Image 1: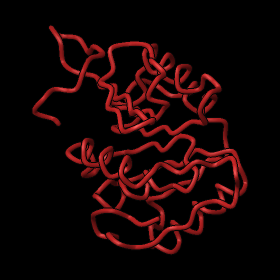
Image 2 (image 1 turned 90 degrees about the vertical axis):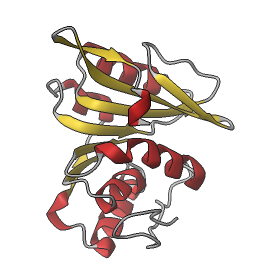
Image 3 (image 1 turned 135 degrees about the vertical axis):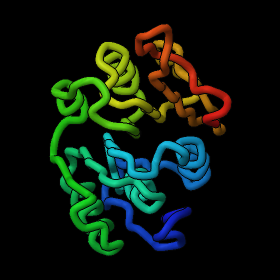
Image 4 (image 1 turned 60 degrees about the vertical axis):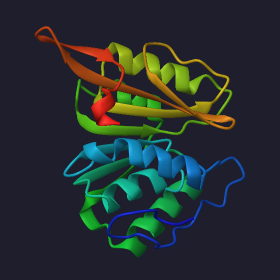
Length: 188
């Protein structure tokens, strides 16, 4: 796997040695990061179910200020630690050994600017995470990877790439209050 763009463009990162980990494909990751790229400069980023850390590291490469990586599996934590060190991410990359759903339960609204989530498929985790964000939007922009035939709750903007989909949720201004809605065309 390689970093697609930014200061670490072309640098190689390692995937965890764990058959349960399904890294986001290069094509999907590139499309996803291109969509959220305008939101990344100086952003506070959350990478849930972080796996190799590719999404968060790509965000740092593209100008994010700080990324919190949340992962439970020891092999994944080791891969993220190795990748962050090899890229020289330093204190901008912080690892949390935690269940992702438990982690977001403690967050206030808009704790992060951008959040990525790549939960294991077929366990209902994508739906549970979307429901938590709809109740307390812990990031201004949340992207969740899931199977293309799975429908997540709310009014997210769904992008399909073969058998994979990314549902994007964002908070937008609306009549004096903050409301959940689709991404504005200008932001895409």
